[in-house]
Length: 98
Image (cartoon, rainbow, N blue to C red; front, side, top):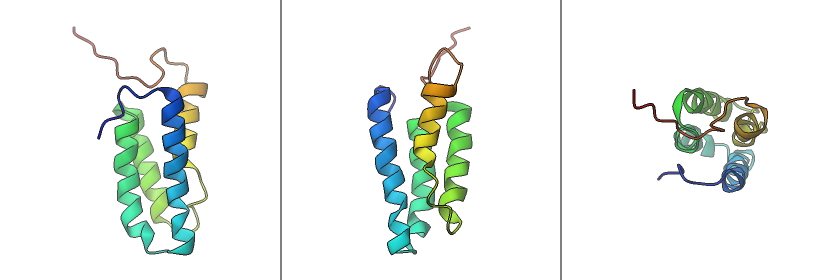
């Protein structure tokens, strides 16, 4: 599964859907045992590099701990990447050939 060439609007929609998946644990709490590692893996696929790895760790912790599922981690990462980040690449992988 790769999201490298996905537009930022599609990443937002995907992120909102993934955040909604996290709310399933309010109805079925054992879902967190499966969703916490899956959400971390998906975060690394949506956002490459160091930022993606840090966001994946935060996503895993947020989903694994009870009562923190309300935090929309994927949406917050999208906001950080495409709205608040001052980097020129806007979340896309930059390849340095030097």
